[in-house]
Length: 243
Image 1 (cartoon, rainbow, N blue to C red):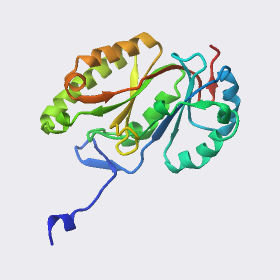
Image 2 (image 1 turned 180 degrees about the vertical axis):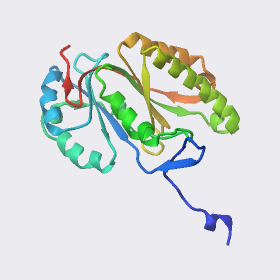
Image 3 (image 1 turned 180 degrees about the horizontal axis):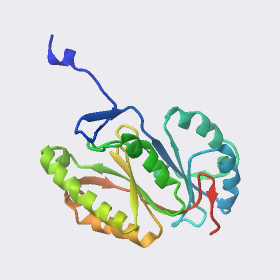
């Protein structure tokens, strides 16, 4: 019997407990961003969202005065093709103009060293998505170049640590946090990740993108970045704000 026949498959997310032992969790959060145009009264969408009991956020599109985007989170991918699909095919969303070029879909993932997988995969990303103190967002997909995959594991860790250091610095300063989603095989443009930058103000989020341009990952090992959706929340899991 060859090695291929002996191979086992484990798709659970991995972390490391306080004792250094590998831990695993077969849970993750899926998120989808759907953008729309021809919506002159975005506030009219809020009552339907609140009644539907959806976990997510509704954003005003900074670059389209009649544009909005809805981000929805669920632990079940079936939710998006059943309940959410039926909801979006009824008024008021059925009357809007879809912008499929901005559609993003992904799943939370672990890097292998997190001590609390439920916090990493489910609790924290959901909290960030629905936190009224983080109304401004920049959402975008990206695809790494093949050159990154050819690097050694140590070289990859160094490059990713450079990115992570910038994110942690902005987080400690209260200027911005992120949501990272994997979208391998889930994106029509074959992107690898969906990233959301969230914060109390827009300028620091733009600054994060600017800082990232100089990192080795962005400058040397990205094949594609964007399109970018930029917006501000007017509803987050039942919390609405007047703009």
